[in-house]
Length: 338
Image (cartoon, rainbow, N blue to C red):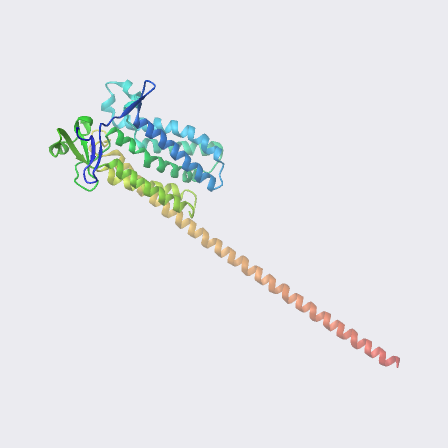
């Protein structure tokens, strides 16, 4: 028996005879696409659950999902092609070959937010509320969607000998994402040459899961609309900053060694943090003003109550005096009659 194609060295997990696709009714179907499709359905399910819990019209989200999924796939492809142009410039038809992979999550995320913005304006809905709802589904989809890279044996990091170290059959890995360091530290086992890498797809999946849990918890006690969307950008972006730095297949800014997604993540984290702080400050100020207003209202109500109570007591005193005076008058009259 030959060795495994994928091997988590420290965990003892081994996957043999690895294939990127399977055949169904004579049609070759890639696991990459299956995982992406399932991730979209999961994301839609989570978003609909959040919409129901918050009393929103779920029909809006069915409609938004149709446009959002289609446009986000296009956006993810455009983002990837733009920053991997050297791979496509000599064969432009490959741009449309989605079966070969090549979707950048950030392209999909950017397109998803733009789609939400346009949809909200057309339907005269709250963009912030929609964003808060959708990002919960979005991060759920990202959590599971990263396993598409596992099936494709891609999106991994440099060499590691850590607890989660993953060894890959070098013959089944695309050569353009294998660094010189990985080749120098490769090893042979059962006649198979392995490279040992960071499973960055797994890091990002676990990070996204943690972010999802945080968003679902905070969403029940959020202070203002837009807070969950900002927390998503901070949570996912901060994870992507360090995870992207490990990867060997980074999309680089034209002619430089600058990792585009890493820089974009940092910018989004900082910007979202600033808006989150401002939103919390405004909310606190608003609550303070509301408390002052309520205090004034309560004081006015109390004053009105005691004034009414004073008036009532005065009226009762006057009535008693009238009755007393009438009684004396009656007694005097009786004495006169005698």
